[in-house]
Image (cartoon, rainbow, N blue to C red; front, side, top):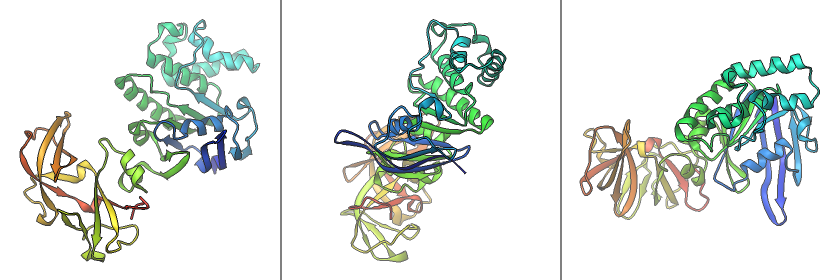
Length: 362
């Protein structure tokens, strides 16, 4: 059953089209992440679901009910914003209870809901404090708790961790995932941080210019990006790209540039590799090895080390092949110096090939 359904939703501000006939079905209990760069429409879509923006066209359903023109308070959603939006003069308990009191809820029911939310979020010792006495992470927990006490089916998160430092983001990311596993509510989460998307989501909707480019589980998004934009946006550092053409067909197909010729024997295309077609080969940093003694000579080319970035668990080595820079992920402890000649080997079985004109995966 769909918990949230977006049907042909469009939104324009004057001549500027922000959402373009967008469709999205979110299953009951699913954690969906809307991911994309600034200005792609992800927060706008979330605000449309919440009722904070009126759509120009299309319909929005929550739990089977058409809520396109319903007020936010009547949509059965709880929302957590990027800014904590807490009342500074109220205690944590007061912030949690404020909305419930306005609804006329009984005092005993309010106390029960606050106690449950405080226990889940581990903020019981903070209930008598005011927001000014809390850390950023504690404030965001309270903001989540304010949505949690509403006891709704759908939670909306608008970049809730972007104001926190890296350590707090990592800690609260785990807490949000644990919260979803415990509650099993539908959650729609907006972020531009791909690490948050890959670690939290059941499915990711990658957006660009008001259009969903790909909707799939994190592993599929990462390993089989639907187009060049998704391939370049997902991954840190980004996928390495080479412009070239296809020569031959089937298991005898090759990828070739002016200086490289690589066999595509192990590549499994989604479509057809047409001889002579201009294509772009995409290879992630971990799909390349340096000085591998067991390497296939046919998949190995000469390179020169440019920069090495030790990262603790592994290292990122930037090399140049015919003047083009590319990144290679290597094991920790392996050291290289700028200018070192090396041989790099591509694992094309895990690579991606895109049509150079359409920019879609082949």
